[in-house]
Length: 141
Length: 141
View 1 (spheres, rainbow over the protein chains, first blue to last red):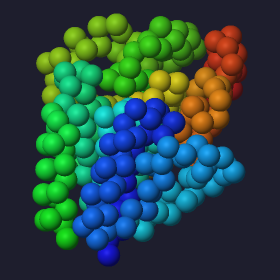
View 2 (view 1 turned 90 degrees about the horizontal axis):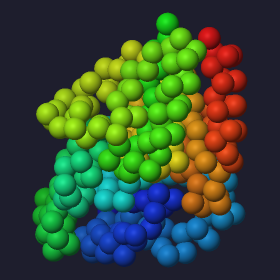
View 3 (view 1 turned 90 degrees about the vertical axis):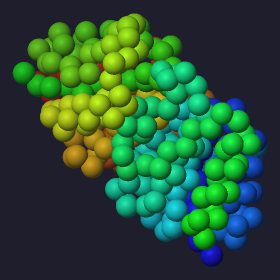
């Protein structure tokens, strides 16, 4: 069983939480475990309320170091996701980035889109996102 | 003259652009140069329109490696700023983070607030931000 670290926005905004849930569900349906499954929970702020920011950071960095694969959904801008993507690179993790296609200058950050380290998939529809993700999961079993 | 790499949101959202401009102005008034002054320009998308994302990334990583000090304003969530903060740490740059105080779970990402590497200043008013920044610039001449 592979361990996947999924990155999505928490404090940056929760508009895409339903999408995070479907992505995590699909990743798990291929027999993977998702270390950061709480990101898809509508209760995420309650789950983290007894933890300090430092405790959250320690836990997430530990999970990131254990991960076999990192998958990020980047449509909602998030400091934490940008930070995690850079850390994933420094840990030499295979890192896949999804983002909705928008006009160029409201789209994915140039710091992510311009860094050749990442495998980037821009999608126009959820159908396209899930097709791309299924393909990736088939080929990375 | 010290070189400051200022981080602020571009594609993540431009709500704080007026604040970026005042911060950069204050940093320069202490005799520093600001490598990323374009972040405060209302024309930033025009300035970047003939560059590929890869060109922007190469330029910004070059500037980051040259910087004597990194200062980030993090109130508007941004993938690029999160990425730059992690890269600044890996380059061992002194890195100062500003963010507006909000309720805990809409505030600064736990990945930044919980990482002991950063000097973090949460402010309640612009007056407080500029007082903190002046203090820092006085003490880091």
